[in-house]
Image (tube, rainbow, N blue to C red; front, side):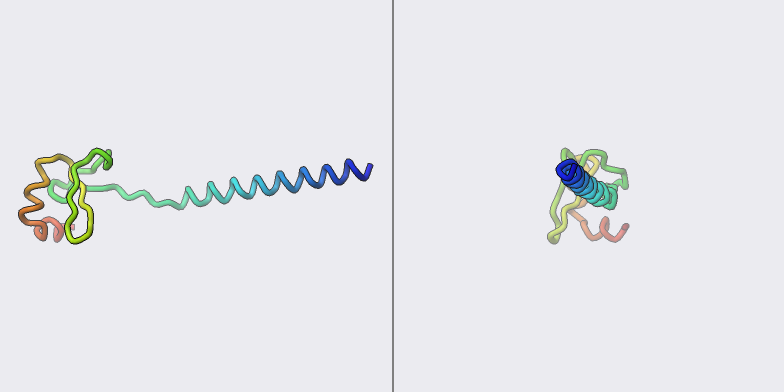
Length: 84
């Protein structure tokens, strides 16, 4: 009888530990804030930043909706940064 009780308590403890770990993971993921990227030249949302053209200016990466927007930004970056 005591063995069954000890086994039950051990299983219960493992279950609570697993639930707590899952809850922490879910809580962490739900607090991640997703920021929509917007092309600084045209103001269009960038749907896939991994494949979008990009340019680094003063240590910050700017993403563009198309490759045609990169050159105007390179020519006058302050003009487009001030729009924000």
